[in-house]
Structures are given as structure tokens and as C-alpha cells.
Length: 81
Image 1 (cartoon, rainbow, N blue to C red):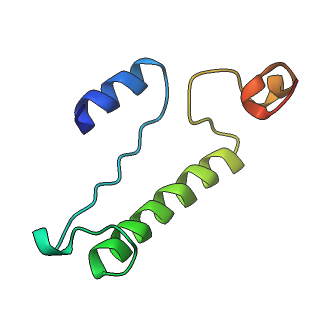
Image 2: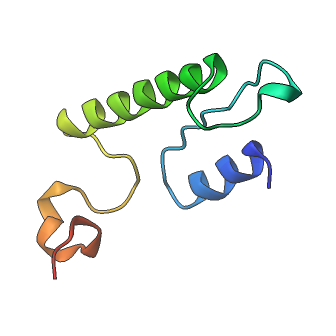
């Protein structure tokens, strides 16, 4: 499934989709072990997206169209029983 199909699937379930692509420096560098420049760039972009999502939640926003914080006690996604 490509990024467009994933975005359509999850946005159809009312999730806010954030895609972070891995951009290799060439076929010989595709290791994804964190040791090369391409890995570090991907990790930096991923951290930026996570920071952005955390800021949206902290400001009272939601990452999906489901129940908001006011119903946290009723939603298993918040770890409530």
C-alpha cells in the first residue's frame, strides 16, 4: 500500500495522517540503522512530526475525529478501563 492509499484509508477513519518518507542517499546506503545521514534526516523529520502532533493535542486539538478529552474516561484509547 503506498502513502496515498494509507492516507486515504486513515483519513477515512477520521485520523490526521502524517507521512514521513525515508529518502536514501543511494542504494548502497539503505540500512535504516541510524548510522548514516539519510537515517538522521528521517529521524529529525519524524521527531518534528511527533512534536507537532503533541503540540496539537496539548492545545486541546485532536488527531482524529473521535471522542475528545472530555470523554477520556469512556475511551479505551486513553488507557481507561
